[in-house]
Length: 191
Image (cartoon, rainbow, N blue to C red; front, side, top):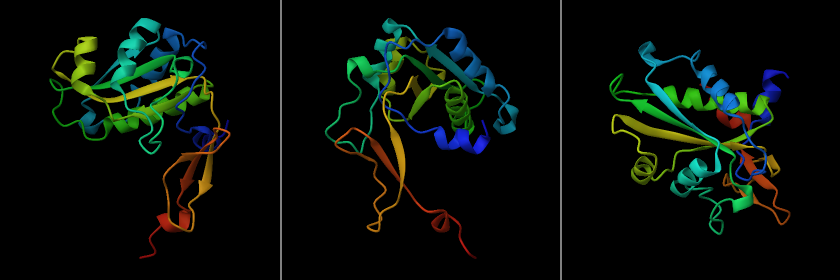
């Protein structure tokens, strides 16, 4: 698959086929990709928690917030919840200044998962204190992001930003998730 095709296929998915298991080795192989990513000052301060069992997944799910623009949706139904998670942590004993490492790691995991036929939702709105308590995460590790993943159960399409300038994603009557994108001409400054 061409890289540009992989990027275009890597959408944010919030509904999954819960019965489609993700092997531990798959999650670990996605973390292994991150070892080769750039890291500020090469400190490599990121640590990861992987989860793919119903019991551990059920400990993670309640501490996540899903789709802020979809006000009438509380998140995926039980049968549509992620089959796996990768939690990205910052090890404060290695670096107090994580900067952007976790963003690079999350996109790398997202692209790697997509290549394997999985979809992801990179979540930053996390109830960190309660997640820390539920998983007994030591204080030295800052919870940075949670990547929920599974076999996508929804169609996500990109639309051009409307004339009204609206960029909020939405779902149509058929449950298709629409994501308005700004045109490239709006992204490049002519200065």
